[in-house]
Length: 137
Image (cartoon, rainbow, N blue to C red; front, side):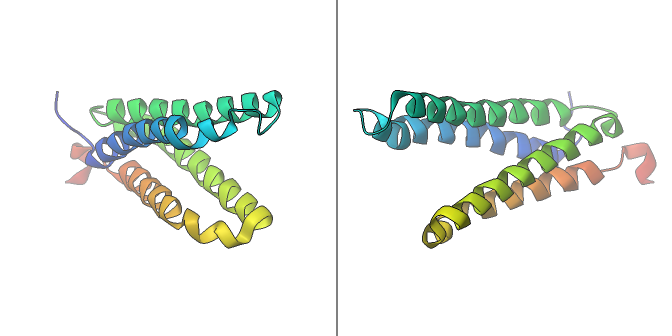
């Protein structure tokens, strides 16, 4: 097997790393803060499964991009790549919008995550533009 799309390969590796760090951060820093009765059990449950949904999405996106990096006919996967990029862009808009609305002072703390997501989206979109070898000539 030969790598056909290095943008997708990089995006896939990043997504798997994002999934791992998201899960780790949740279990070590964020989710323990909800334990101990600080919030209602229903709120803790919702927050915990939403956290894990994002982790699972990142892992699925990573696996998809790693598989797509080796596909001979990338045109067949451009729609999926672009749809994932749109999902990520909307996710970023929601994160930044809600943060700005509820706690604008902490918006600067989201800058590193926002830059990482923008770079990730750019890699995906560059990967979607890669032409098959026969069409490059």
